[in-house]
Length: 107
Image 1 (cartoon, rainbow, N blue to C red):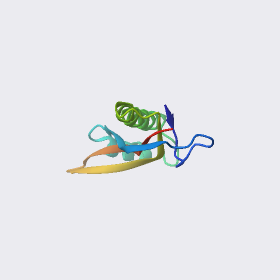
Image 2 (cartoon, helix red, strand yellow):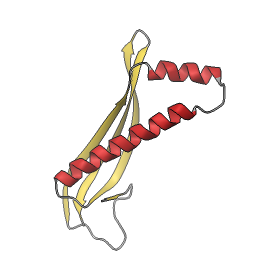
Image 3 (cartoon, rainbow, N blue to C red):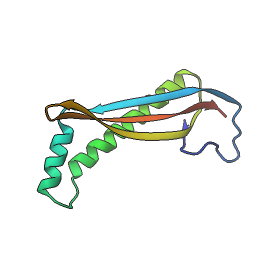
Image 4 (tube, helix red, strand yellow):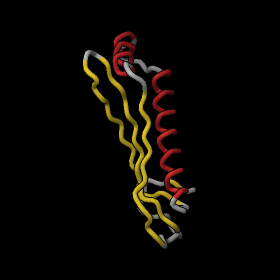
């Protein structure tokens, strides 16, 4: 399956637009608090563990989006957009949601 942030694939015209497809992943409670604590500890540095968690969340959201597209009979998802949102649960708790969305098409 082709997944692209562009609205077209050169040399592959879209035959049919199927539907909007999405995939979501939520990183566990307190990750934002832990993340901010880690940043304070390493001021200006990078946190490899959190970067890995974000990569995995992004990959999972894209995989879920691709599964939704495959269920529609798509062979590509175009105009893919990735969003990262923090969800405040109050009392210092929080979660991070990664959403992948795009248009399922047949080329």
